[in-house]
Length: 183
Image 1 (cartoon, helix red, strand yellow):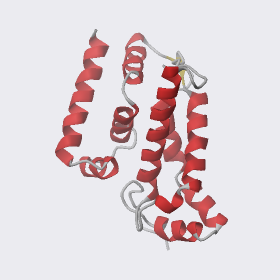
Image 2 (cartoon, rainbow, N blue to C red; image 1 turned 60 degrees about the vertical axis):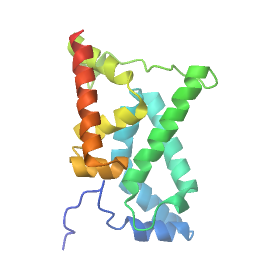
Image 3 (cartoon, helix red, strand yellow; image 1 turned 90 degrees about the vertical axis):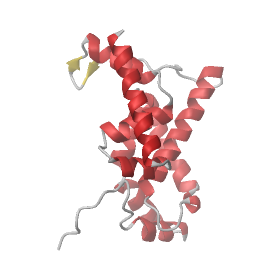
Image 4 (cartoon, rainbow, N blue to C red; image 1 turned 45 degrees about the vertical axis):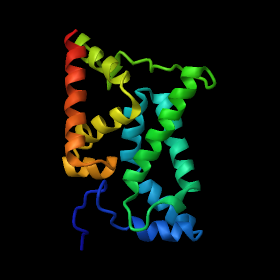
């Protein structure tokens, strides 16, 4: 029998029992838990950095930090929102370090002119440039809405905000991106 489909962003599924086992030293449970959400986490890391090398570094840093700090995962919570917030925090910290020159790598990601074998047009390049100028939290919110297709209540739960605030922020971000693309 198959498990019913669930929303990994808002429904914890087996995350709490695996997290508890991992907190008690079960490495198999830890690896199962982290492997279970690797695709979604990778997409978020890439959306936060817009650069493959930086996304790989952020992905691995997030997994390491998650393994070290798994005890701070709220009891009964889904792991994926916690991982996304952790990745956004690490990306913001890295960007601040890049801006002050303490860490290696460009402060603004160098956008590849070819995505998935297709050259980017001027409009796509313009949108990506505008997206790269957003804060990590704003990129995460847009990525969760556009890539992961979360509903407003799910976005609010992941972002730890109320629904009207999420709706307003998304409207502002979409208007900003549209305005920058038109410019």
